[in-house]
Length: 325
Ligand code: TXA
Ligand code: MG
Image (cartoon, rainbow, N blue to C red; front, side, top):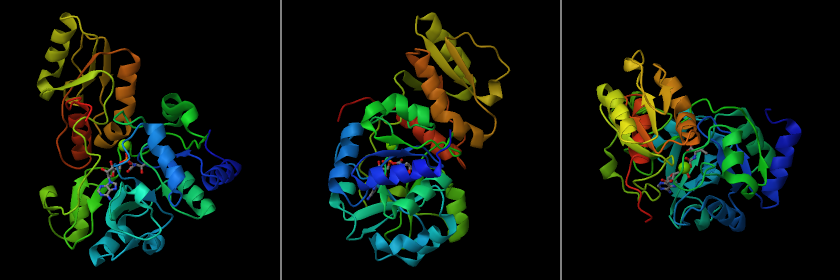
C-alpha cells in the first residue's frame, strides 16, 4: 500500500518530465507538479477545473530552503517556520524569482509549506525542487484524505498516485499571511490559532487587517453533492427526521453529545467525541454520505476552538451558496 522507494523515484521522474503526481501529506492529498515548470502548473488547473487566478501552495523540503523560494522574510515568519515545520502551517510571503506567476495566480506573494509526511518529504528530497500542489480534488469539491479518493475523483488526469495511507490531520493547513510583522490567519487549519498565539505571545491580527488578497476563498467550497444544512446540535436529529419525512434522502452527522439518541434517516454518521478524530474523519464522512446518495446533509458546528475552528470553517463553506462565479 504505502509508496516504496522505487515509487518515489518514479514519481520524481514524472515531476521532472512535466507530469502530475498525487502525493500524501499530513493534511489532505495534494495534486503536485514541478513548481518551476509553468506548463506543468497549468495542467494542475486543467485537471482540477480550477480558475487559473487561484494561487497554489509550493511544498518545500525544509525550513532551511525557505529563502530559495521567497524574499524579505520577517523575523516572525522565520520563527513560525522553525517551530511548526514540517507541519500543517502555510506561510504567505513575498514571491522569490524561482516561483512563476502561473503558480501564484499572478500575485507577488507565494504560499509555502513543509509537509509533515514521510512520503511527501522523500519525494521532495528525491525530486530536489519545489512541488506546487492544491488539494487533489475537483474544484469546489471535498478534499481527498486517501489515495482511493484521488483515484476515484481524478482518474487519468493524474499521471502517478503515491499512496501514503489515510491523512493524519484530515483538514488542510492553516494559512497565515506572514508578509508583515503581525501575522494574520487567512484560512484556519491543522495548526490551531491557540498554538500560533502561544508561540507568538499575543493575539493574532484580525483577518480583515490582512494586506493580501485571498483568492480561492469562494463561499461554496469543500462541498459534497448533497446540500448541507447547519442547525444547533440539539436540533440535528429533529431536523433530519423532518426532512426525511418530507421525502429527502437525509444524511446526518450526529454530534457526539446526542449520539445515544436513535435517528430515522437514510444514512447516519456518529461523530467521534475527540475533535482530532472528527477532523481526521470529516471529509471521509461527507464522501460516505454522498456515496449513499443523500441529497441533504444535516450537521451542526463544533465549538470553534482548537481544530473545531477549521472544521466549522469547512462546514460553513460546504453549506455556502452554490453560485458558479
Ligand atoms: O493542507 C493544505 O494546505 C493542502 C495540502 C495539499 O498541502 N493544500 C491545499 O491547497 O489546501 P489548496 O490549493 O486547495 O488551497 C490553497 C489556498 C488557496 O485556495 C488560496 O486561498 C490560498 O491557499 N493561497 C495560496 N497562495 C496564496 C497567496 N499568495 N495569497 C493568499 N492566499 C493564497
Ligand atoms: Mg482545496
